[in-house]
Image 1: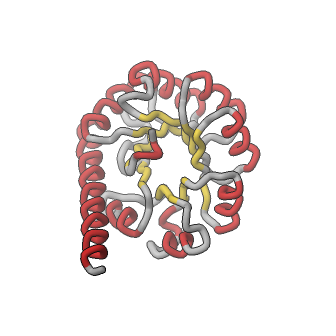
Image 2 (image 1 turned 30 degrees about the vertical axis):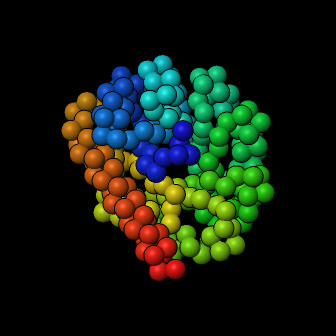
Image 3 (image 1 turned 60 degrees about the horizontal axis):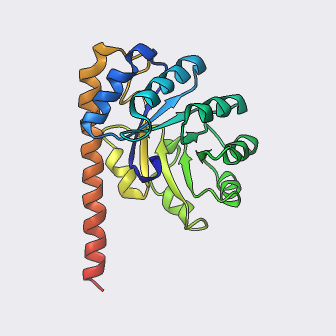
Amino acid sequence: MIFNEKLVAIIRNVDPEYILDIADVLKNAGIKAIEVSLSETERGLACIDRLINRYGGNELAIGGGTVSKKSEIDQLVDMGVAFILTPGYDEEIVSYAIEKGLGVIPGVLTPSEIQQAVNKGIMLLKLFPADAFSMQYIKSLKGPFPDTEYFAVGGVTQGNAAEFLKAGFAGIAVGSNLVPQNATTKDLKLIEEAARAYVAAVMEANEYVFNKKHDAVAGC
C-alpha cells in the first residue's frame, strides 16, 4: 500500500483508454503506487476502475486523489480503493473517509492543519505545496509533531526529488513532471525515462539515509 512506498505517481486528466499502458510503463520502471486525481471526476473514476480491474490492488497500490466530496468517497469505496488523498484538510471529508474504512492522507501546510490531523490519529500527511518553504520546513514541523510523516507534493522535480527525501520526507508524489496531463501512448517513452529518473533519485536518497544512520551509529 502507499504507506510503504516512497514514490507515488499522480495521474491527472488522462483518458481511460490510455491508463493501462501508462500504468504498465510506471510499474515496469519500478513505481508501485499510483494516485489518480479526480479533478476531472468521471475520467478519474473510469481510470481507477480500469486499474483496479487490472491490478486489484496487488501489483500496484491504487488510490484516488483530489478527493473533496462524500459522493466520490462512496464511489471509491465501491470500487475497492484502499486510500485517498485530499487537496487540503477538510474535517468532514477526513472523518467520512475514516468512517468508510479508507486510508486517508490529507493535504496540509500549516501547523494548525497538522494539529487537526494528529487529533484524528492521522500521522501520514501530504505537505502541499511542498516547495512553498525551504527544505528546513519539514524539520521545523517535526519539532512539535515528532510522530508525523509527510509526502512531498508540488514542485517535486527530477532535480530535487532526492533532496526532499534526504531532508526528511517519507515520500514524494509526482504529477505532470512524471505523467503529463492528457498523456497518451505517444508520451510513453517520455514517461518511462522520467519514471526511471525518479526511481533512481529514491535509491540515491535511500543510500544517503542509510549511510547517515550507519555513520551516526559508528560514531557512538
